[in-house]
Image (cartoon, rainbow over all chains, first blue to last red; front, side, top):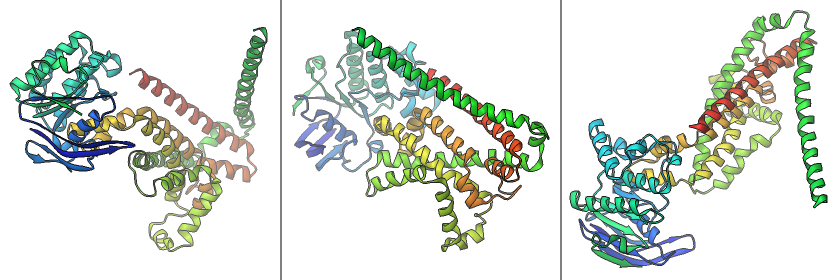
Length: 204
Length: 267
């Protein structure tokens, strides 16, 4: 479950007024809003990348307002993708599992599954600069969910993607809900892409 | 149209003349050393075989490498701190880190000497034997090297914005893990450039070394000090021979850095 209770934050001259939202476990919530409304700031506050000025952030019932991003365990797909430039696709995806000390077998199985689902098998040895924008986004998606997190936040996952990549990411979201019972928050300008997946809509 | 074309041509010719003229001066400097060294009656090889010169070669290589490592650790660490964290006195640290680059080298040596011999730090110096010993050479070399590493690495870290570290944090990385696994590999070019600069400065450091470490033959004699001692004893050819050796070593390192940098950029 993702809970944001009366959370407000300021970033430079921009301030997000007190906002509350609750996404129950194993459901998908969609956040929409005008450009510059603070959607990305909201997601980053949940992931722990931005400090909130007031209010509370709760994940799985635990107050994580002051917890570090590492301790929150949120799988995050940023809007700007941000792959690690000196690592190949495989190392990018393995980054989280390696840090968590996963065994090689478990890591290989997970990579195989993600690479198949997101059609990355042939791209595993490539560096990020050798990928197209759509491929980079799919790699970032694989990296975000590699640790099989209970909570996943996606910031504009469909922006500037071809139809096929959009379908792959959509299918990944269906897997996350059905197999992992993950709680998902998606920030998007295209809520129609999540028809049949999203349970809740929030407008900020 | 015709006027613009003429102006462009004149501009290009002026730039080419500057490049050719300056390159010619640099080549002439090397040849001048080579020519004078050729007049060395004892012979170039014999000069380089002298015990004190051989010791100076090894001392120069050893101290410059060690001070490069120190400069890299300290300079990269402080530049990361200033680039990523907001704290009271950040601007002051940023300003202070540039100081060794702008200070006259003799002033750095003099200041080090006063600090270690004329203040309560003299007790530390008496205990650790820093001034007029090898640690003084390393300290003098590291201070200027660190400032060079700082400036280059700060520009490198500033360019990266820290976004990759944030994403690494969401995947469970601590600050140290994000720094060592994500930021440092992405900063290879900057690290290589700063290491080369710090080493070149350390290898050729003279003023601070002479004042703070002295010019004791076989003890604190690095190659620039050897040149100074040879000149003092009137052996211009010997000094030119050592200069030639330093030019050769610097050229080899410069070439290696260029090759490695090119390889890295192609990865």
